[in-house]
Amino acid sequence: EIVMTQSPATLSVSPGERATLSCRASQSVSSNLAWYQQKPGQVPRLLLYGASTRATGTPARFSVSGSGTDFTLTISSLQSEDFAVYYCQQCNSWPWTFGQGTKVEI
Amino acid sequence: EVQLLESGGGLVQPGGSLRVSCAASGFTFSSYAMGWVRQAPGKGLEWVSIISGSGAGTYYTDSVKGRFTISRDNSKNTLYLQMSSLRAEDTAVYYCAKRDLIFGVVIVWGQGTLVTVSS
Image: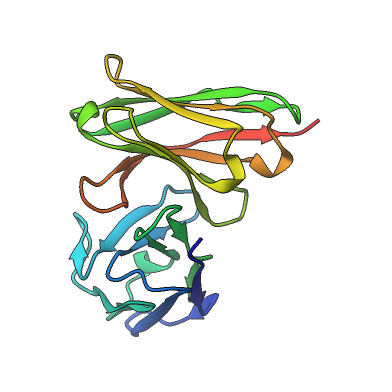
């Protein structure tokens, strides 16, 4: 099983600032990685997947980089609606696995 | 509009069984692989199982192999998860998930159904 490790566990930022979230895989997952956002009490929502594909409705301020084992999700200018927990997930080999999440807070 | 509506969650004793269902609408159900993702209270996400569009292919995470069975009825646009020999650690919200045609990602989530395993 591929283990996904996200850092930091919590990221404290101010609105308008840039946020950088990391995700590391225990072995290469190529570009088979996705990012989800989950707000309190809500269902997760797919943000981006593959090399750089945005899901429907994902704003352009969200971008991804990386391949192999190291990935980064960048939110260029945090908006109030972006404060949430973010999960990465590899879909390179079953069982597909999630990271433990990064909470982005004020 | 694509919708996934789970049902069947509830309280069950350790060692017991439960079946959760997911009624799908708004898309050609048989064309998509479907699955179940769970989230224990206050914890992260875990893929539990996935089934191909035809139902011929099924996959399970190791912790549920031999205890859970995923199935689908394409004539009823419904996905099922039969859970047996339930343990306290199976307590979670179980989300029905529509898989992307190419990538193994969830493009549509249901609202979830809570399964609580406790005596």
